[in-house]
Length: 205
Length: 209
Image (cartoon, rainbow over all chains, first blue to last red):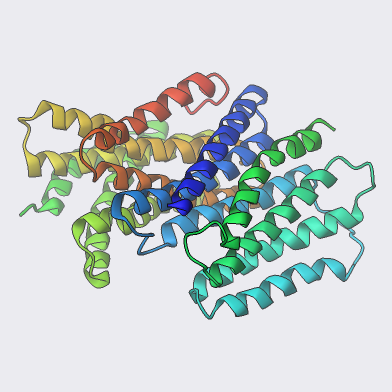
């Protein structure tokens, strides 16, 4: 019950975010806003499929690949958005810290293998590793006044919340509010709209 | 039992002859239509095989297996076109829609043969609901590609992500239309609503022709 309510709330918030990003994409004919709209849209579709199966069939999807595909697409659009607002430098300084991202996601993938499937774990680890690596590197390279710092920080928070949610789902404590999974999911729901001002700042600079 | 390969031959023959006679844009458009029909025929075989292999019933297969197979098969002619011919943006975008139209047309023909032509309401739902959904999925890919065209890496990554996106969209639609009552009617209106949103927001800004 709580899971369905939480999913519905997240879906409503994401739908609003998708609508705002889509209108801006159409108004400014902007690729950046299109990518953000597609990111939100992907998350909406993934949540919606999950919720439809839960409501209409009384169970989570038997084959979760469909929702996963949508969330993979969301991660790809988010990475593309980051690359769009901050193209990689041809001669970037080699640093060690950004590599912590892929190392962390690889370690977590090994941990999640106790519950999840190999393929989806590998794909999520790769996509999240890429997102973490790119956003940490851009955060380190950027000036303090740089316009895309907020977006990089937002992406880092997004990844942190996703990992919090996945880890909490490994030690599932039932459909109660004491389950930390719902705290992370609620935090993510509250966080999603912050991607709009972060993108706006990166675009208008 | 329907022999869909016979239906396919009957529908594809005049198109094939026209393809031989026409040149340039006309020929390209008909090739895309034919490719869409072929993708539909192959999807039916592959979906049936995959559903049998996975041991799912037809209803479950319609939202677990069919969307993945159908959308992937629809993307293959375009992938071939993109990789082999290095086409222009407008040709790929119109091609995406034409493949979807070919796919929906052939699927509707098979539907007519199976369920007959007497119930107009059912046919309207089929035409403007399920049939239109294929066109909407094609349109989403086309509009997405329009914005993500400039760089090759963006095109490739964007095309894959858009494919994932439309697979889920298609699956949600199939889940909703397997329900009865108001849910079914709301679900059937999704494609039309999406076309209206496109006409309101993007038509003047994104030329798909």
